[in-house]
Amino acid sequence: MRWTERQRAMLQAIGVRLFEREAQPAAARPPVRTEPVEVQASTSSARTVPVALEETPGRSQVSLTPSGGLTRSGRSGGVQQTVERVAVVPRPDTSTLDWDALRSAVADCQACALAQSRQRTVFGVGHRQAHWMIVGEAPGEQEDRQGEPFVGTAGQLLDNMLHALGLTRDEAPPERQVFIVNTLKCRPPKNRNPEAAETAQCAPFLERQIALVQPRIILAMGRFAAQALLASDEPLGRLRGRMHQYHGVPVVVTYHPAYLLRSPADKARAWEDLCLAATVVPGG
Ligand code: SF4
Image 1 (spheres, protein in one colour):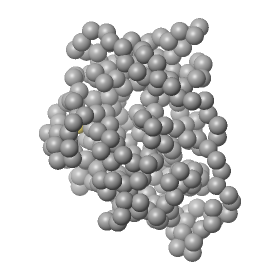
Image 2 (cartoon, rainbow, N blue to C red):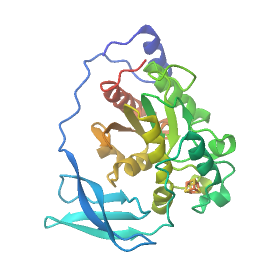
Image 3 (cartoon, rainbow, N blue to C red):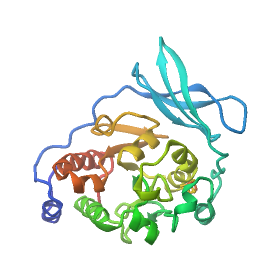
């Protein structure tokens, strides 16, 4: 990939050492397929739903189910086994909501305990037909106060990373203006990690946002965003560096900007992830 002078300046600003190389194709991966798995929801009898599975023996999967359950399952002797179930309250059917109805549903949501401690829900911002969708983890203190994702110094770093690819959160055509959203719409107290039941409960909102935007590429930032989108419990280090799929949409996993602020040595890897995503959908 060749960088423009503007991109070079932006890369230097975010602390990424410049390099010139041809874009690498995504590493060959076994195809993701779906297979029926029996799950138990809190409000209904056992049912069978399609769950994404990778053809990799010995790995467990964390799966969000349409009925609101969350399963952790794996293969043993070639047989799919559900080994853990997390029951959550019935999840809303968001499949027919338009943008306004979806925003209202998020603002009014009391479905998990995070509603009690939040100041504001954080719905997401950006172009409603954005080619690039950025999925983070959960609101932090400033996001909770302002109602916008990725603000503060982590947000500034994200903005600079996006600018380096010719992308922006400011008003622009859909090939340039991204849509930024979090997996959870409410802040976990004291910025603790999201719990599995909270992620499962909030998933219909993110699912509908993705269905409405219909992005051409999703950038999952941070372990919890990646694991929720990909129904996986693999560590981030094993998820990044290759292409995934979410209902047919390519997904690239990378570090959360807040982590990069603490571990600047990994900025170069994050930039490699962005370059991998740009091989699918070039920046603006
Ligand atoms: S985190 Fe999601 S599910 Fe929980 S209250 Fe907020 S919007 Fe509702």
